[in-house]
Image 1 (cartoon, one colour):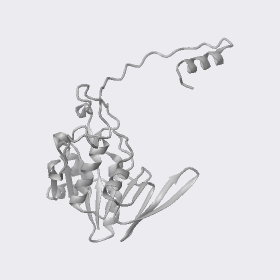
Image 2 (cartoon, helix red, strand yellow):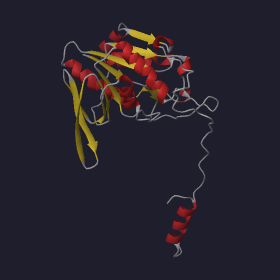
Image 3 (cartoon, one colour):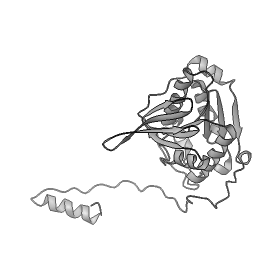
Image 4 (cartoon, helix red, strand yellow):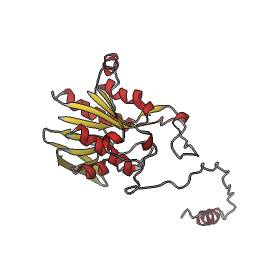
Amino acid sequence: MKIIVLVKEVPDTYGQRKLDLETGIADRAASEAVLDEIGERALEVALAYADSHDGTEVVVMSMAPESATATIRKGLAMGAASAVHITDPGLAAADLGLTARTLAAAIRRTGFDLVIAGNLSTDGSGGVMAAMLAELLGVPNATALSSVEIAEGSVAGAREVEGGTMRVTAELPAVVSITEALPDARYPNFKGIMAAKKKPFETLSAADLGIDPQDLSTAVSIMTAIAEKPPRTAGVKIVDEGDGGTRIAEFLIENRLV
């Protein structure tokens, strides 16, 4: 079985996040770049299955700047067999549509039985990538799984819904996304870090995948303007002199907060 795990380099969750006001692209120099934790958890799901099933090949895949090579190699150090890095200047600031089309092309090229992704990245927070990929690949999709059970010809899991838990099953090939309810990822050990240097690492451009980043015919969004968030101003202090409730209600109404 071949399992592709989608990982993403993101600005450190606990660091400062800024946009470049000229390009509208995330300023990656403003914070340390790390592998998104939800992607690590997705990789742990695949590696845990591979640990007990010989013949399972786990591939980490990412669409990221050229500088993300070291970050992606962390997936190899954790235990993935190979990596695919899609990098192209034309893909910088790609919207969800272009990202999905590019990743789908790379997934087809690599071949797969199962694709595992996180349900929500900590930078873009789109939350729709797995569903878009399943649509483009023409395979079943099981989203937001809080548990995953991989079998020879199917994948199943639980999805938390209001008031209960939903049981979902899909035949392979399929795309699934997982939530933070899944276990933390393993840490790379010294042996894994050394072995990662010798594992296959394929780098692909948009042209390699037959993708034209300038083709706006299928664009989902186009950025027209960007501005820095205004500085936070002092709040309004209301002293209750018997009319506090009324004044607070008036303030909420005036600022369209209710």
